[in-house]
Length: 107
Image 1: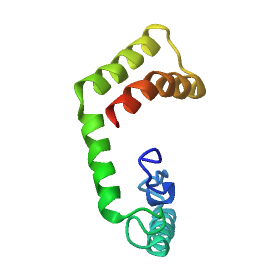
Image 2: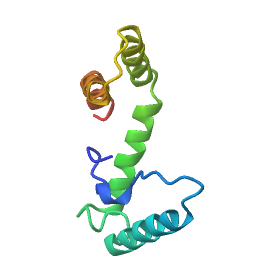
Image 3: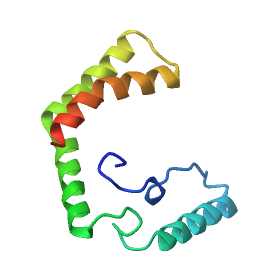
């Protein structure tokens, strides 16, 4: 999403178990406040909203493309075969394998 131009503060992944209601409420409240501060999509990014919507549509089409999915599948299959368990190594491998495929799809 960053490559498309979306401010990374607009998406967030944090863990909260079902037993952590206060943490969940805090995370959601903070995220909601951050998005409100950023304003409408495109404003914080300094990009025309219609252009950004077009970029997002292209990104969605890219991740739905067979070539990109197959690249990801091949990378994960290779990681399993080689028994790679280190999160950093997994991230680096996926990024390396996906970079070219996604760049081509986003053109």
